[in-house]
Length: 411
Ligand SMILES: Cc1cc2nc3c(=O)[nH]c(=O)nc-3n(C[C@H](O)[C@H](O)[C@H](O)COP(=O)(O)OP(=O)(O)OC[C@H]3O[C@@H](n4cnc5c(N)ncnc54)[C@H](O)[C@@H]3O)c2cc1C
Image: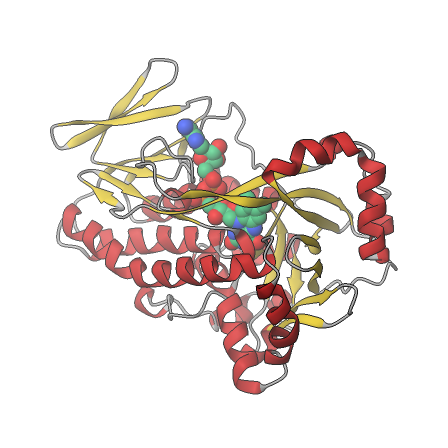
């Protein structure tokens, strides 16, 4: 499309920031809006997959993020008390591809700095409440009663609670408590693995290496503890000491991490929703990232899919003959991958987070075995890497190009 658009991007998460950068690069006039006074990322760790890295690489940012994160070669989990290996996924099954553990703040900072460097205007302290149509254009409205300039296209990147998207889906029973802590040198954790311990599917503790972060001196770790949302109050009431002894009994190596937690405020509770907006495009409005589709982070795909959405949107607008054809193409480029991962995540989540007994019983006997045989080990690695359904092919992206430019990601 020759025409350059006036684009209002709502939300400074990975989807909004990546979309703003890509659309700006194509010559569109872009403004970003964010509710926080100072843009800030909430939460703890994220796994960036070869799919997300492919987009970051196109933006020239994979090396920057790689330098502040931690390379992840393996996802490894054991059941207690049996000690059975119930998860063993190695990226090496896919050759030189790897995952990257990062603090959410690192991904945000790398993208946000690039947006500022690109001269993209960011309006902060603007809580979006609507995006009303005005002829062929749309204007954002804000909680303070203000309205934006008119835009040819509003990109809704406001996340899973977006006020611009229709309500749909359901909140999941289980979420998790997360804390960012110093990496416990010498405690026996593999610095190249996301490790977890489970008891059935109702109890799970995990440790993800995060790297030093932007401007950080020491490597960090995310500690997460699976918890049913309706048990959060009881967790607070029982007190930290009771919880710590519970975790230490399940996985004694966690002691040096637990020692760093002095108050419950260091732990952030994150709840997940599973939802897919059926029609992600309306006249002059497009939903990307979690505002289109969100799920539990069991497979670690959300931020990666958000960046793929952003890339697909920019590409479709570039190649489409006009705005509406471009938006149709955007949906076509992403819909299959999103359907596939939403369905698989819905199926996998209760295997690791639920009150059921049958699924974890089968998991404990089957999933570890799958990691031992070539074809199933490969299929598991493809799934975790976000590569099932070949999402990069229609976008002309190749994960293979990452290693040449970001040697720190290669084993
Ligand atoms: C605990 C947890 C762990 C996760 N782990 C992983 C992982 O390992 N790998 C992975 O890929 N994904 C993971 N995810 C999912 C991932 O975080 C999301 O899929 C991703 O952040 C979606 O990006 P987004 O930009 O679409 O939305 P968001 O990151 O939610 O960003 C939305 C932005 O919009 C702003 N905003 C919201 N409402 C308004 C408003 N009304 N007005 C103005 N601004 C507003 C917010 O402040 C925010 O800046 C995890 C999620 C959670 C909760």
